[in-house]
Length: 625
Image (cartoon, rainbow, N blue to C red):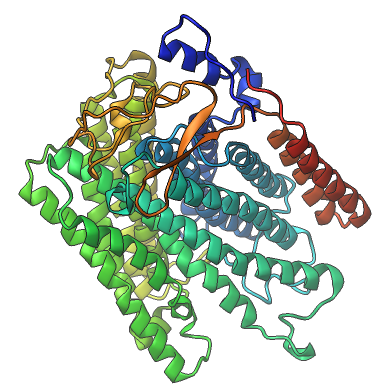
């Protein structure tokens, strides 16, 4: 691509504005390749899915508030329960952390002007949106996934599910996996190649280490899930027998492949939360993170060890004792890097001068909930206990302390922490702190009694129950807690919405954060940095280098640096806004709909259209304006 000569007589920022600014209005958002705009598209889309998943959770809890309730029919309950799990994992937490937080913040933290592949970045969002709408289309048609979020065989076979429900599940998650893989690859290449000069590996922000660990986990874990889903569709549509024991298949093959993705997925969800914590704690503790190298290594080790723990979910399936012992040991080993981080966080706060503002409160809540969920997780490493409590609400309690308490609380804290950077305005601190306590109380009241009712024998995925089992009061408390939790979340979003328009102007660095995003304006300009900074520390805003940076004001450019040491390598010319990503995303939606309805010839035609679109995308590169 040919660089555009800067207009004569203009200042550097004026030239950069002309080069980088995208068109205004709806068309600008549809064709954007700006990582910040794409991050915001992910943010609001995942919030919408979060709202849908929250409504599903309230329906489930209302149905189970008392015995013999009829709020939902058995069929509707199965669909709502399944879609709640799919939504919170695949359509909220993972895309919120990688797509929204990762997209918006990572280039700013490493001193880059955009992601490594801006148009692929846009495509990943449109594929994510298409996959989410595909899944919810099934629910609206009364044919939503109904076999649980892990959809065990044989419940997912045509014998037990002759409709399209499991097909929506399989094709929708394949669709979603393509989007997540594209995002992960983009984050990896951006982290390796677009760091500011001087940002060697040992100077990368801990948030970036966490996003790298998550991205590699996605790249290596999603193929197992995709393979499982392809096998399922081949069995359902074309009569293959991958999971059919009577024809030489293996009924446990589904579980092995699913949990080969499913347990790393737990750390895919929790690692961004750890990265957010390592950003917020130093800022409000007013000191650098204790044991910085150990915390960075621990984040990577959590992802690595997580791939050896999948059998932890299969202790009740009849695996050999030696196999069970191996997975039990691996389940205990993964505690070590997590504990390193917890002690580092606590020592950093204790040895600093902490200011307990709302973001740090949410991180404190995260640590408390993570420890509670982690302790019950260690209990599952004890094989007899796991076998006794498998498929009970004790598992549901553990899972939600990790998935909601330990993953969502840092997201909420991160929303408050980076809100001034994204909007240029401050949130209401008193309301934020009040919303934390309401949300924390609602979380504890919702999920802690599940431990007890699980030990009393209540199984997961249960539609209704009779009185007299001793479950009534606990379920009622959980339902009350769910509504209290909803109130807390509504307080948070009301605060942010009001503050977006009425909040006090924040300035570029209201919290005096240590990383590079706090060195630019709030909100950041389209080009992020007028001069690419030179980095001499993991906390460059606290250890400023007065040497000149890279101006890069001759075109749509960003820097490339060496992978290990962060030495300046070359200038990269970045692609501008484009309509091809949304076109390819729309074609992909039609392709998956045709596969769902077994119109294979039409699906093949749209696959060819998709290939032609990719060719046109690469051939027709519009000139920079």
